[in-house]
Length: 113
Image (spheres, rainbow, N blue to C red):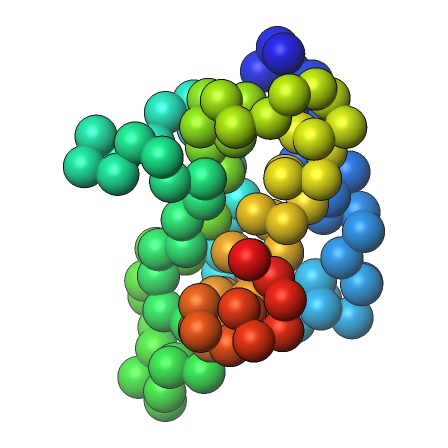
């Protein structure tokens, strides 16, 4: 799958996130990256930054948080485009949840494995 098509799928997954949640996202950028970090090559996505729940009165002047969606690892675990659509949607929601301070454990409890 081309990078362009994969980026479209990430955009479509973002379109499915309720607008009320997207409006609450603050100082965050979402990127499509080909490869996961070398120390975790099977990683599908990564949130880097300060979750909204951790920001205090002194949160200012910082670079945007980053959500990285890793294209090659996702393509590597999917059999067809339908699988990619589903995995991208799950990964996008998972990483956005981290922006809101929701832990992996809580996501697992909610069924977002």
